[in-house]
Picture 1 (tube, helix red, strand yellow):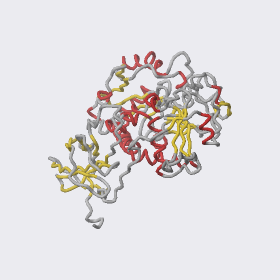
Picture 2 (picture 1 turned 90 degrees about the vertical axis):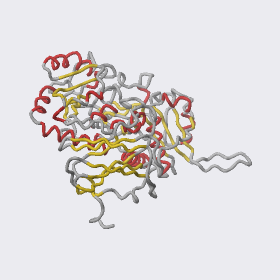
Picture 3 (picture 1 turned 135 degrees about the vertical axis):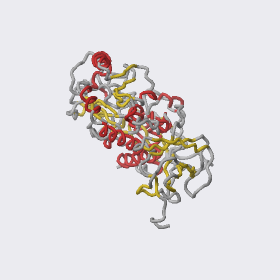
Picture 4 (picture 1 turned 45 degrees about the vertical axis):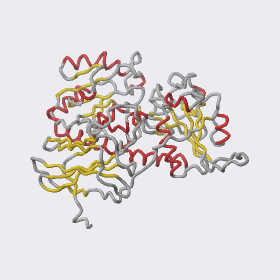
Length: 476
């Protein structure tokens, strides 16, 4: 079929899953593509394709098609059944008639016959726990000090089997996958307590699939929300290498390092984390564990619910716990007697509430926060992970405090394009609010960019590609 006869998508609309698996900790990794196909000025189809398997789905799917320019949205019931298989994926089309005019876009509908599905990370790996002495023997380049290795770190590796087999036993050529940690010696029965388990599984799957372990493949990952340096004051001069033994015994370095020191815990020096201090080349990011706990953040798809921006409440909203924050989250502000969130609740929030600018509290459901034009985000022990995700796709403007931390996709998230930056002491929050109130078109543009960013970076295919690049970096 020539490109001139290939069907086009519908212009100026956003199509995605709607209210998918709102229960958490199910660890489902079903991956879907949702798109549209233009038929006529008042008719189109919603197309759903499963990307992680050639099979269909056994959950009832709904989609939302949102037309932001005309402030209309349509919820389309997809159901549980698929109407046919293609060589590489399952798809289903549902035709929709409208009472308003639609137009074809310049983008073609994907060729589903060529769309490859991915099958990574669908089955748990057999990971063998070994002590650190054995790990060093298997990976002679690691040089991990078993006496000082922080209990907040896990080390994983893939190597070829070298041990002899018992007489009569079948030869086992499968690679050996190992993990070591000083806190939980019985790794397999305690993986629920291991905050690195799910991102590590995906990285191991990628390394196995791409055969990156011929010379031994290993990595060290922090389970802390803020990575290796959680609780440490951010510093641009943290390049003096010191031993990994400088932690407090629990694996935290916040009270033990000077602002120039960086702990080296193994020979290759790099440490992976789910959020890390900005700007340090030895700290590498992986997707956060909540991404896997929350079913790839599918429940946040179409989280905006199609609520028109101009119909939302003209206030900033913030709903989160005061706990889970730190005084060292401040970048320039020098208050040391409270955490950043405590400072906001004690000093800033009451004044802004009196002016009618802010609605805040500790028990505001995030589903209700979407009804406000502006949503504030304040770091916790590290980046806010799932909160950042749903706020990006809220259809509101994300107000995000300048941060000492970054996640794996922050290189794609631009200030003034996807969010507005709030100073660490909140001193410009009122100024930002008044700017937004007088620039609604710019705010809608920022909100639209944020939704597009959400779609791009939280796609499972994008996450796998990011992990593939990270695995190649580690292997080299």
